[in-house]
Length: 245
Image (cartoon, rainbow, N blue to C red; front, side, top):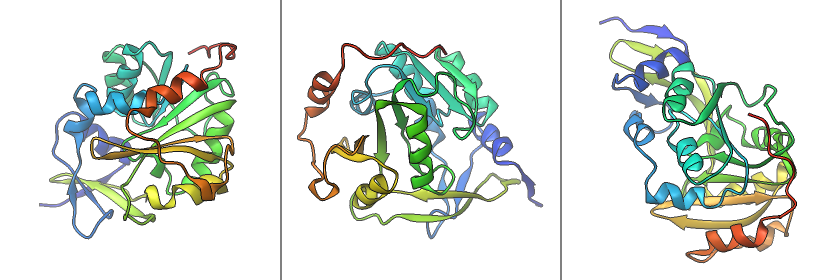
């Protein structure tokens, strides 16, 4: 059977519509594309991650909208952005706001968002986490934060060419990075951020980045259950006007 090359967006659309696909290039062997994890409803572990978000939040690489919808259910003003039209449509079908947009293009409400979410490995978008996190600084209010899901300790930072494949279709290669707990401090520092917390949850890891709050060498690891406390003490009652989505 011949395999035809298509754009990333086209192949990702096939996957979101139910075609089994695998990721090639992020490990020694192909791995199934975890579409079922993205299309389900937000679960308890997801809400532990979302608890770190404060105020109006932009969900970068929102996919089919599981976390955007979860944020909306928590009472946040939220905007999902994605480069795949099918992902945007599925997010909207969940009742969350979403637009077709690359993070490096102009974003509605730019400079006024209070939180940015980079979940499900999306800190790897573009294959350059430092460039991505510098761009996110432009999107956020100066007092804003980035909530980043990370690979666990022991996973080294890598950048490679990857592709998505189905039975008879393959995406054109795209650059992607994997960023873990061990490397977040120096990557954040290079992008102008400080790491204010780094915490495990349900077998996953999350870091919160804010404006150079502490020396990188003093990277704190938040105790279990601290997410809500950090959210409460850091909320500014005089936050800027909510972005218009």
